[in-house]
Image 1: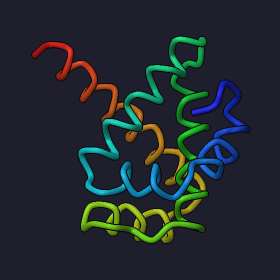
Image 2: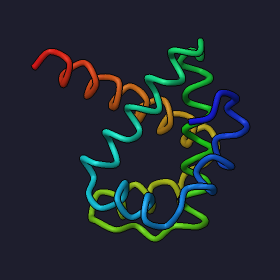
Image 3: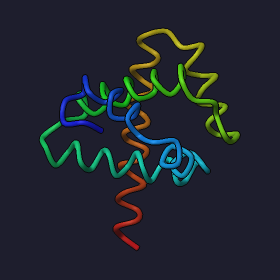
Length: 109
């Protein structure tokens, strides 16, 4: 994610196709990537609200510009496409918490 949540979409857009393919190849890789970005956001002082806002921008970008590449991404994409603004806010917060928990689980191993 970018230092400023408003730049999150620009950051994703700048990734080359090979990097996108690698990140999106399976859901665990995507979760790990998102988790790394959450860690970076936390390290520069973004709180849950800022992280969720950046996650929402990335999700909006992915929904508009990337095809889902596995079942999990397809479900997330369909949820996102059919969600109202407040539901997207909730999904973004849940994604941040999910990858944060994944980060903690990995660190405990």
